[in-house]
Image (cartoon, rainbow, N blue to C red; front, side, top):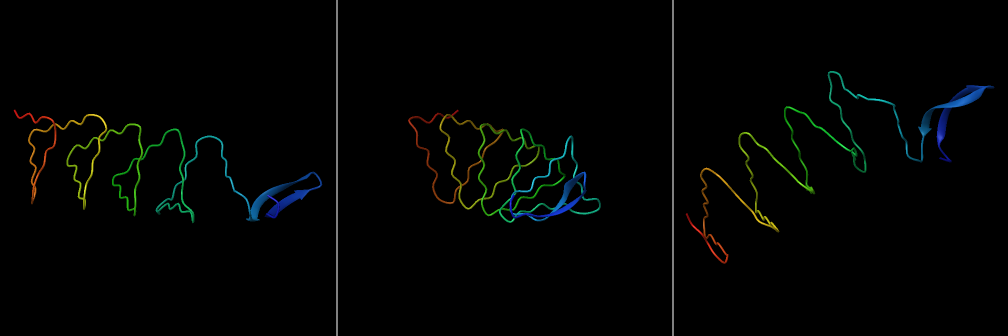
Length: 128
């Protein structure tokens, strides 16, 4: 854009921009084909002063361990399927679940423990 400071090489046949020393506009790095970005024997860090965005028609993440630390998380899915082979554990200060349609829970055994009262509010309660 107008006002950018560039590093240019050239001769009578033409000039080429080989670097942007100071840019006022958006910088785009476009590479044809598959691209691999790797930190050999180190950690790859991506950061942005205003955020980091990833956009793609499909994304895969494969790791041995995943840790997410955030002040707030908002997730929106058309459909979500989770499969946990061992233990799914949730610890929360409070929990609220709202299901607009039907809800089904199935387990080999189920225990509900409260320190105070438990309430079931419905037109009918069927046991057995």
